[in-house]
Length: 146
Image 1 (cartoon, rainbow, N blue to C red):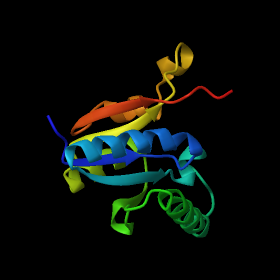
Image 2: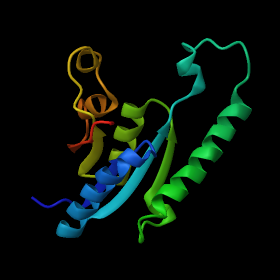
Image 3: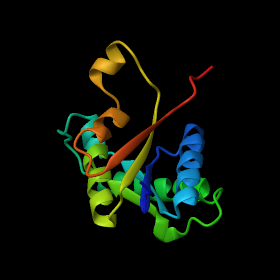
Image 4: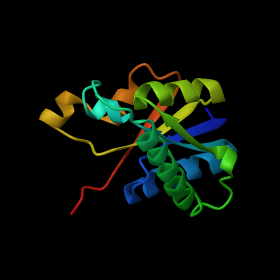
């Protein structure tokens, strides 16, 4: 089976480079389109959803900073146009699934630390994306931090 459109979910850290490299290799082997997505989680989620102030200006700044970081990250990969770079605001699982459906992606690639024990029980973003995904999901194992 060859893939036609691959979506790579990234958090814009240097750990994501092996994930993008794996996705690029798969895309090259099958002639697939490649797209990157970074999800910005609403600040209200970090505060439990009940924030007694307007966060819209801070959220816009957060989005602008993410756009700069995305451009800096993606510029390291020649051929990734601005149309292939997506930023979304919301819950990572929902937004990755939504974008994969909208873009007609048949593979989502994510990085995974391969956690065990309590971290595994509580779940991770990669595990969260796997469940209910509208297409195949490839979890690329990330190197353990030294």
